[in-house]
Image (cartoon, rainbow, N blue to C red; front, side, top):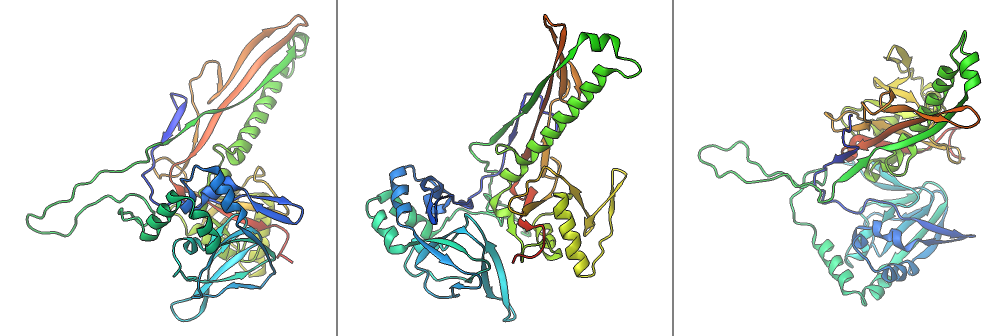
Length: 418
């Protein structure tokens, strides 16, 4: 998308859903502590400005180790503590419509469970919790929370408001609802409405990647036949800048796709490797998925899982090339996606401004433009007869609505977890 003014604003509809982020931890040897400011990721504590209050709450958490297969909570039993997953994987189990056991979801590092324990004494676990791997929990009991809340009236008022629930109308995405009437007859009184947007919409400024190409005048004068040395050095420099641009679009903490994917759109694998079930789960969370984006090793791992099940998905053609696909959605390779401890994420994306998806941002028509949104400027000749060219690329990315990008996290690349 063209960004004529150097900044792209994303006006999102106001959302009434809060607190879906992840909490951070500090590890000292075998001791794990919650980082107090990150407690603002909890719905109850999102608006708390008092750092001392957050520190007091953080001090009330008790560390608890768990082993693989351990039952951490049973469905329907009293819910008396807030749990933070510091490390490991925990699954929520419930009963399906036909009485069968069902996995309702999974939680990993930084996720929180049991927020209702802080809102009232009558809360019960809506689903059972079972550890898939060994790991560490931090638990804050209701008694410890009330001891701190006794000194903070605003915290008690916030807990009361959340316990009563948000009465404002919302749609299934948590956005402010647009009131309307349908199916009426006669002179029915029509509702009035307006589209409620976020009060502080995010603005994306174009990021920049730059370097200075230096070429000696002797090379430019004498060695430009049969190949133009300046042209080839410039070509290689531009390729390097584009590689850096691709890395930033995926990994930049400010606008990169991985860092800015909504936490509600992040899911975990069922068993570690990327199975067809995992890819279906990722695909079903958004309409009009344009493609998957995965590291080559993650694509190979998915291929192994398909082979193990006797599945051979048909490839599809993208820009004249045959690429792997699942359910007709191409799986594109990107070696800029990081690998950490043998695991790597897989992204699923809907693209395009008209589709309310993820978009790339640039500005064409800049001075000394060599390629779209990339300029090459003559920067002079120094006293050593070296010519300098300033090479600059401008770019950014924006996720227009939360469900435009989904992430399958902690994908094991080399087989099932031990």
